[in-house]
Image (cartoon, rainbow, N blue to C red; front, side):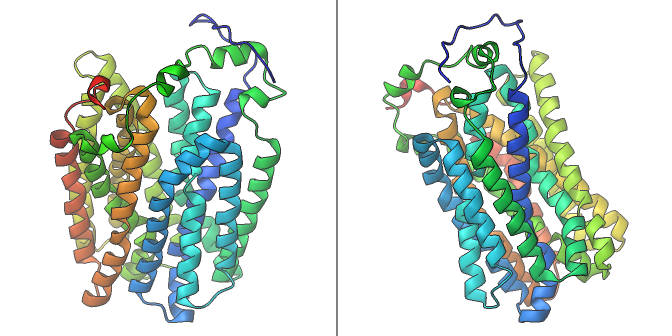
Length: 434
């Protein structure tokens, strides 16, 4: 569809709301993404029984995924820019869905490791594609709200996974979990490749809505003629503060993602039926933490007492301290109700950190380098944070307890406050980047 972009006035609402249907693609894709990576935590108890896997083995599978996911971040961003989000995201869905399905067939650890690596490679383009699609389909003033919706998929996915997957496993078996999720992903990937289009190629998008979407696009020539070097971003203190702060956060996030259901089973011997509900509650808290903290930072900035950057730093730092305290308390609680409550509180504030950390990239980076800074942060975080599941698994195997894993994870999470409040200092000044 060829359209001339004639900016509309700020208050003008376009004829047509097709853009609001696009976020549904991103939300569903993100949820499938997180459900597929969450299957391991649900299937782990039965896999350990049937295949004689240890907690260290389960942690190693989590680490293999995280390293592959991290390494896949940087080339994914380049491929998306070169070939478009439709093709790269669609292919990624097919790759990760095949890896998920195939995991139901194999029985040898090294094959599981290879499939987890393939899962990480396939899932890597998901959120960079969502960011790219958001920039194509929404004007700037709507992007924060839209990003909050699709980013919440990283919480809704793990929240919905336990009750659905536990039911499937209780009815059929752990291998059927991988078959089911793989087939769902392949179907969604086919539908996405068939029906999604960028605004320029959409046959249903009205000219008025197209002009509204494109009304405040940046001048692409400014990006093309910029002398900014991607590698030069690593010399900035604030970039390293973001990497280190997010690393501290993702360390405990990965422990929850891999071991939360297993901990409830081992610690309280809950039934599989109860596990489905109990393991989902903390992630629902995470989803609300993401949304509420974003709203609070917005109100703080609008008050005029804080810059947008400082508002996010304050919320991140307070959230890091609270999450550290609650995580450290978890292994000392003997009540399953209070344990789930503490996990919910912890994930509420951990999600407050992750949501504001992604938004912080827009404050630290020049507008045309936001994706680069965000991908560097995510690459560094997942590469380093990949150690946490295997370290936690080794601690459990050596000590017979999760206590040290939670204490160390809580202390590391608390360090995010130091990184974001004292290391992240100033935005990158364009004229100083050579």
